[in-house]
Image 1 (spheres, rainbow, N blue to C red):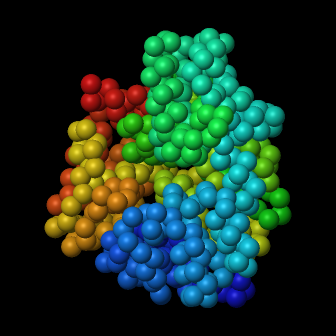
Image 2 (image 1 turned 60 degrees about the vertical axis):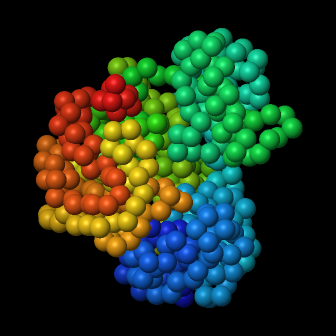
Image 3 (image 1 turned 90 degrees about the vertical axis):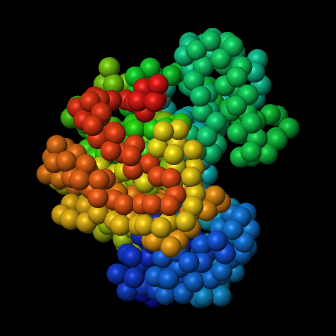
Length: 451
């Protein structure tokens, strides 16, 4: 049934996530089709696919983001479905619709759900109407500084300033006074213009009340064709640099069982409010002192950090995505077991976190019980400056957090990468940091480590 409905599956992505999706697609007896740029021709995901199609030059705009080329590759290979992974076209409403209009299955939520949750202001308003807690903030796009100043006066400093669209922490900053707001607004407005172009009514910016000691905790949901929305546990993503995640773990060591129960219930309401189908993530900010939370945003795709959920639940989220896309409503038992931590291994300076591409001369992954590495490279490959510098995700699972931390120390020490700069030394440093080891940390941890 799945073979006839979904296969072949075209994976519209690259690197470790393309490789990870290919692994499940092939295990399920489906044919995997990869697309790639000239710069990625020698990467493992291209070799491991059943078929691979060259899209074009290294530039994302001429390869992975060129919807016409991706669709043509799907037609030429007889693909019946498209899995977008994360990033690139994964939350592109027009691409999702184009895939469906071409008679193929989109392995993701409906374009309508993507559209509703893609604008942070619209998403906030929808969630508030659904009874999901939201932070005090603007309900309409803030299109000039004077409006931002008025909004900040009503909300009260400090405020978080960010773009209404986009993701990955781009354009986000905190303002503590009017002068800081002017700088933060200019930064967010520039980022907003890059996402949506210079609209006649100005760039769309959002202001929210800033939580001083916050944890970034997200809930994995799965929407089924029969109408049910399931919560598959939470992930703590508070270890961040420049508002971008570096380390994630599940379960969160910083929330009470009562707060966890409320967050999971709110995430289900969020999914139900938009008729969500497939795997998605409801991101929240937790006030670490008050043990309360507010909705942050919803990611309508597979997350980078999905392996920690898989390790503690025993589920394969990509398999569930495929089954849901085929119209199945599988019975899912998600009883958490143990503790999992994911370390994102980036080609970057471990002190200042600037990208450091280069040729990989040595690549030796750790192995052992409770160790999982989702990698996009091997020795001899080149990490180019054209894409995100993520090289691999090193994940560990233990019976409890203490065991997971110890496995993490051993695995980080055994992971040998030479050539490009990498952040493994930072991961080792983090594993000895008192705040992280005790679990009593927040989103300001990395900044404190580097101050």
